[in-house]
Each structure stands twice: as structure tokens, then as C-alpha cells.
Image (cartoon, rainbow, N blue to C red; front, side):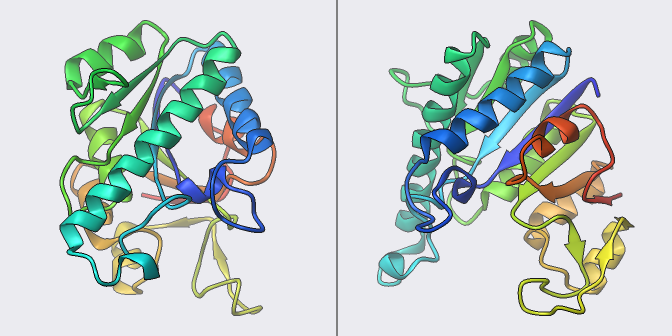
Length: 233
């Protein structure tokens, strides 16, 4: 792979027992795998979620205005972005955080051409604060950034090993797809990502690989182009 966009959920940074906060050993493993792929010459952009701290759909947000809850979620993604940058810095990997919400003491403002220039110089670029707008998920932000930086593919790290015809955590007879089209995902209402994100990728001919990012070495394998999980194309 030459240039990719990796989408990491906020929950992927958390302890599996609590799904809250940041587990140092987990973020260190993720950083090591990103560093390894970066040293192999892969240009890597990363979009991080914030669900390990705050999500607009959580019980604590039920009485809040949706816009305010979404802004809080965006700030949570900045925390995760800085934590991942710190872990990558410790590996000697040059990293930049770009935020869709201006906060110059913490991150660069998101500028598309600057992000592409960082990638060309071998730096890992972490995109924080989603799209900078409420009502849009970080999956949509990942689809948008993947298209903007002209990535070859978007990689979505989850806690399941691909896309199934039903929820594998609830249905033991669920069948996994190795490849599936965008049309099938939409027609079968498979809950891979929200409809806005799926449609954006389809319109920009951006393939998506969905894989289990909790399994050691899977993030690295996906970054270098190994065929794991499910390919949506």
C-alpha cells in the first residue's frame, strides 16, 4: 500500500472490561503496529473516535442538545489523538495532529494540502475533532479525509473480524463476507458505518476494509495490504 486512511474507534483505546479511558498497553501496541508500517514506507492518515470518553448517544447526553453533545464528542477525539501521538513519538515516528476545530496550542488546524505534504514526508497524520461539525460521525469524517488525502483505501478497525449478514455477537449462525459491494451493504442495511459515510465512500470510489483491530498484528497487516476481514468495494 502507498497511502491509507486508518479509522480507529475510541473504544479500541480502552480497557475491554470498562470501555472507558485509555489503556496504556493497548495504545502502545497500536502505535507499534503503525510505526512498523510507516517504516515500511506506507503513508498513514489516522482518524480517531472518542467513544471511550464521550459519545452523543450515551445516557449522559440524553438531555443535552445534540450539537453540544457532538462537540463534546469531538473534544474527546482530540484527547485520543494526542495520546496516540505521544505513543508514536516514543517510537521515534514523526507525527502531526490536525484538528477540524482550531486549538493551536494542541494541534495544527486541518489543511488538506499540508496534510498531504506531511504524508509525503513520511509523517503519520492524525485527524481529530471529526469534521468539525455536529451531526456527523467520525466514520463520516474518516470517509471524508480518506477522499481528501487521496488514500488508496480506508481501513476500519473494529472488534469483529469483518462484515456479517447479522450481528455475530448475537447470532451464532451469522455468515461473514470476504467481499461485498456498497449496494449490498445499503440494500441489506448492514450496520458497518452510517449511511452518510458509506455513500461518501461509494461516490468517491473509496474501498473499505473492515477488520478486527483488537487482534495483535492485524492493524499492521491491514496497513501493508494483507487481505484480512471484509473488503467493501
